Image 1 (cartoon, one colour):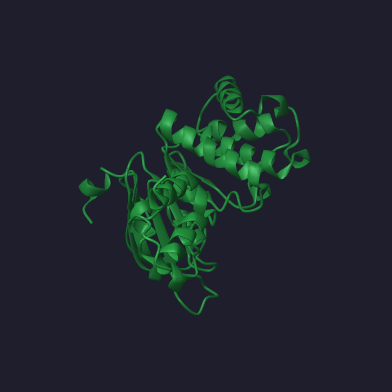
Image 2 (cartoon, rainbow, N blue to C red):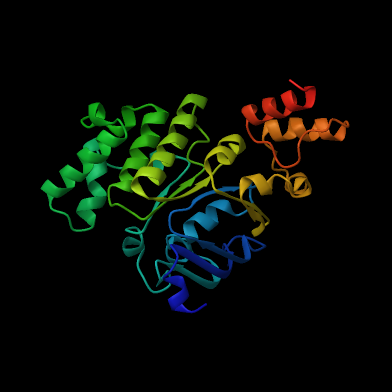
Length: 290
């Protein structure tokens, strides 16, 4: 892959294979993926598919921090992850993990949000301004003087997201960051990511098993299994490939599963994937002539 081509995209992963030192098989297998600027990409797949390793490859944690047998090339904004530090790449890609406590290390929320800006050269005054602005956006202003360890799970996750965003990265990657949250907070996190995408122009990459929310918010859905990309399409097209979902064990959205069952029983539901309750009701009304 030529460097000139990689500079036109946020992330370019070219034929990457990776194996952990203790693994008997590759976790990523000749995987290639391009993330374009301004996309909202949903990634899903069964446990052990390689999703977390892929996320860590996107900001250089693999192979610069997490050791193993790495082959291939990854470029972030035209920068090779083999030639640039994790600190340098973190200004382009912010990564939020499933467990926010693994990322929260400071004594107060304010200090947590200031940590990134200070590490990247901002003065304390500038870092305070950055922290307070992001706290305002995410509704954390009342928590600035609290210890992160005293917060609820949802609050901790919002702080982790805010901390990743205070250095103003181009790309926000959330690796199953909603898996331990209650349904209301999960919906809130997805809505926040949609706001970052729509209003701030951020590229969003969200790994999740919340297939209904991925189909609602993502413009592109990727299914990974055994370290390889099995499907990469717009959700409307992705859910037509029923066999891929069956083979990988990734469930369809409930509405898509329901309308698929109706078609199999002979009901003439309109063609194409139906992803929302409103679309399903419209199709049923049309079927009943109402």
